Image (cartoon, rainbow, N blue to C red; front, side):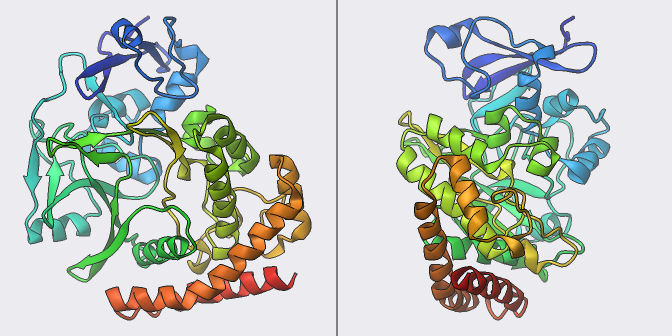
Length: 416
């Protein structure tokens, strides 16, 4: 039985397909015939272009589209604020207009607007938005933005134009993401900014990020890699999918420990899909090495994405959500992806890297060389990156915890 209140899936002004749910609440998907006839792209590695429906019972459509939604307490709060049922389909209908990637999900009676609309944020508006950690769902029904960003952290998409912040209305595209302090983890925006800049210093491709503050609260401003400027001056969307979507896992299985992908699964995905596998695979290996050595134990499958570029290439997206979580008390220190079966970063040794190399089909000596290079470069770049960070943002004593974690882990790795 099809849901009479289904959703249309759009890519800008082109109709991609349709979503519906069955009586059990499972979501199905069907490509629009004109999209297929005109050579439209597959929205996911798990949803190849075809004329047949992706039935709800198959699970692929449900898992792909549900992965666009926020998780945990953030999701619960949105459902309460909007006074809607906390189901995947109801949330997609309410906030699926501006998602990660190029797709907009709109009710059948709505067409994507040809005019982008934004609400200008005054300094006071921005301070309130930061204080409320991005909750903007108290707008009227007519004005309410349709904003959906996956993940468990409070985030808010905005447009930045000429140093002014604008809040998208309806399904208008954003250019940046605001990320906020947690009540018990006030240092997260600073930690993410620093960890990202450290990754950039050792030549990993990462998102552009700034640490900003208002009314004594820090927040991070992250430039979206899935948006680009069009010749018209408008913001265009680029399609992307995270590795849970591309590998067919639900968000509840983003961690390997919970039955999600292993690192080797991600490695094979990039090998098979990337249009530049040689570079992307090396970046992916060094990302995992960086996570182990730089204390980012939360590098799971939803923190990796494929980017479908405007020129038709499919590439590993810039790395994001990089945080030295081991410097934050009360956060699990075990690695999201094990290294050769070992999840305790303090116990990862040469034999574990050799096992990971074998799982990925990489020569162990090559991977060992990468590990040593990353460890050496991290130690070289740690102090200069800290100095640059403090020259931009002022003294930040809590960064010492990150330095201690990285120095200990790198020195252990080099000597081992």
